[in-house]
Image (cartoon, rainbow, N blue to C red; front, side, top):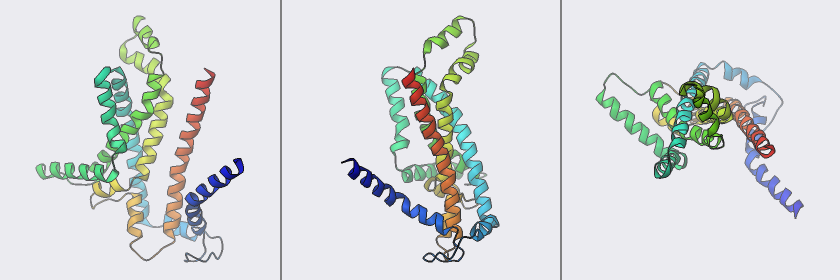
Length: 265
């Protein structure tokens, strides 16, 4: 049975990752072909980094992801603390409302945000769809994930330590910074990495809320598929895959370490 389980697991992962492996291999192909591999070459990576449109999209994606991760982490952490301090029905309602964007289809969230932005812009003529609406939309869909990462750390924290700090004359703000933040820091870091990954990888919300003046990297990749095939797509997708995988690996390693520490405690 164990042999069958291993074979079954291998086939599942092969089915999931074989296309990605082929894409990565052909990103180093020396010729412009999707079926013949002529030899190792960095030609398409060189052309990729010399493409001003792609580089601008990469800059916008990284800037958006960093800002969205930082801002959503601050808001999400404070929101998690507030939700944890609530009691009874109010707390359950807050958690349910927070979970709606997580389980909600991205297309629904994207269109809802777009309609909201269009309504506001129609009332204030000086505004337009662009980087501002893109950043706000990314912060909006990242906050619930940060809350979900921080909440378990707050629940597992000993609240008596914070109360003891207050009893010893420490101001609430200082007690929060000195006592609470160090205990929930792993959740905060994981939430920030998760927010960065989600923002960098997002397509649907970016497509509907970035306007016509700017494009994120996933949107640029989508627009490249409408043109004659270029192996630069393989190189760009490979780099994006690596950029997303590294934070996810870090998140999983941190969770594994936290589980071991919890088991030892």
